[in-house]
Length: 211
Image (cartoon, rainbow, N blue to C red; front, top):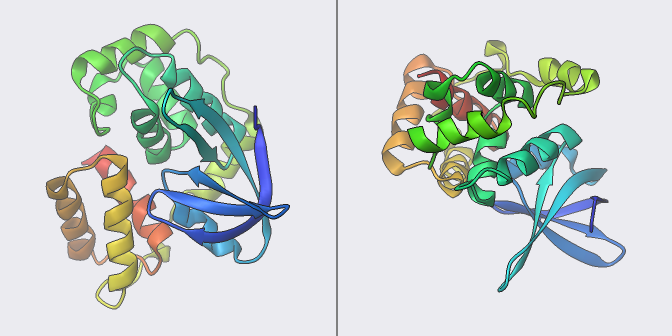
């Protein structure tokens, strides 16, 4: 079992990062791999979940243990696979997702790609009592600090490459072309588009949950 990997990010794809350590490059799937672009040549730590299928072995990566723990809890719910669990954990802070489950907020949960009403109800039924106290205080502080602020927003038209990368990343998470285009138009209309792929993805994911 691989608990975490420390190394340098060699390159980034729309659904994963390649992290190099001891001469080996590990492909790690991530909901928003572009968050690692800011680290440049720095050594980063990615907490991993080792997922084994008959025909393949995958590593899913997370910036905190709490995100990974939530991902693992979601995998225990019937009908949710790694792609669905990754889309959920990528779209909001762990505490936001846990609060929605504990409050039985079915409408919120069905905003995630591939999550219908029956699956959302199953998530609540299976996890409501299992997620009490699931988030560490330190993680909550980090999440507050990382929450995007409106002053970070900038003019959109000059950032076509980040925009396209963001569209591809959102597609990899399971959002439809129609959903993505609506969110991109909303960002453009509000003058709220961002200069980096990471920030565009973060802002788009927020909008998916609030509109």
